[in-house]
Length: 228
Image (cartoon, rainbow, N blue to C red; front, side, top):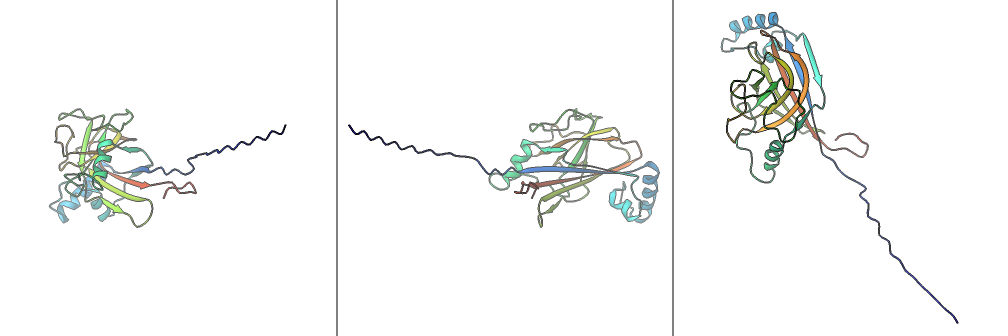
């Protein structure tokens, strides 16, 4: 008896070879001028720029006064859920009510060392209208957007004068309110807490001027493992 048997089997393997992961990184740079430097530049500003109430970073540069210390902290923050919602809403959905500009945007500093989460809506040190452990400073000018090369960047800068934010700087964040102050709570639904990060910068003392600059980069890993 002849017996012939044939069997065919089709095997399909699906693999996820290539995956793109978007990356967002923030570098925080803090320039510091001491009480003596601040007082000297303030006197110069009173003579040459009488409208200036507090010297900011650009005034120290104008008079050739270098900071006594500059620190730079890489990749130390996250974009919050509300930040992502408003940013992506500009592409598809509802655009942010008050876009970041020279009139809308603050960098905040606070004392909390608690790890940020995506659900954050304020600094950890922000305890409300009477807070002494947080301060949000209006930006010194419109944020800078750079898209000519990869990664694209968004840069904010704010100068904290001699009488504000005199505490240990352990955290930072950005919102889009229009005036400096100690809290972002209760300022209305249009106020977006965009990002939040930890960065131990030491203690700012009364009389000093500190300028904080955030450079937020947006990119994705290339095949070579670098961020484009």
